[in-house]
Length: 358
Image (cartoon, rainbow, N blue to C red; front, side):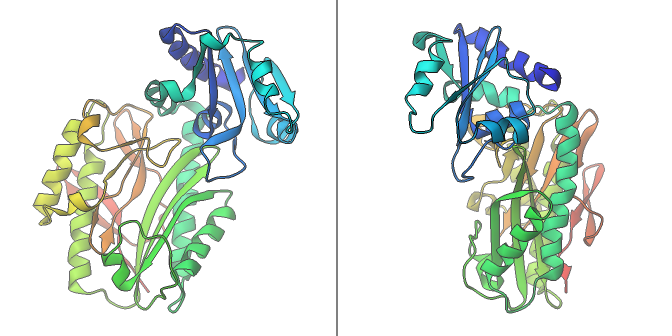
């Protein structure tokens, strides 16, 4: 199994707890996590074109003849114990092959144990940590390239096109690609791009994916000096974000983070703004594996996990991706190229991106 043997052991732990004999992985996030490869054809679907069966003794791949060679030769970094290929025009043959290895009653689906798999999937180790650090910098460079190069008069679609191009040139899939301009930034927290054209102010948002892992970032750009309202709200939102980043340490639970988030908004002078948009949360192999919500209160931050907080106040947003280490969190989507502001968060000083003035 090579570098993936530890991941197989973690899956077998879930299997052992269930009392079943086989666990079938069919979702992109789980297959990409196990194989460290792209496990999709259509990025808009959750299901992979391949399935992987993990038993107590074997790991096998089930895939149609269209995808088999490509996935094995180009994508999946994994030594399977067996590979079953079936014709694309006989999809029912998949189940016949599958039940030769495990009884139907003894089969567990990854959708049945998603909560357990979140705990398995989101703790990164080894090469996954090295790769997501590199992806973080590439993501920052991609969105910032778009920020540095966008032009007044371009539509939100064109801004999103710049982001997508900069990502794909770096081998990143832009699975979330948002852009808003001028007054629309004050109205929409999830701004899918439209034909509105940029006059002075732009917000860019991206979540990139590479081999399943996800990194998120947002940047603000203004032509000429921003208004006092924008600058004041930006100071407020980066204060909230800095408090969340500083508080994200191993052993801290979501209950504490949720309370600290509300206090941070209050201290910044915007006590109700947190209600208008989610604040982000645990990332990994989904843009958000778990949001910062009251019913996730018992979730505890662990070393090796990735978080992306995205506090917002009408007209501004702050977002980067952080990796939790033994002694605190590191922000992995910084490039050193964007203007930054230092923000005091308790005893820590956190750097946050400023508004780029063009």
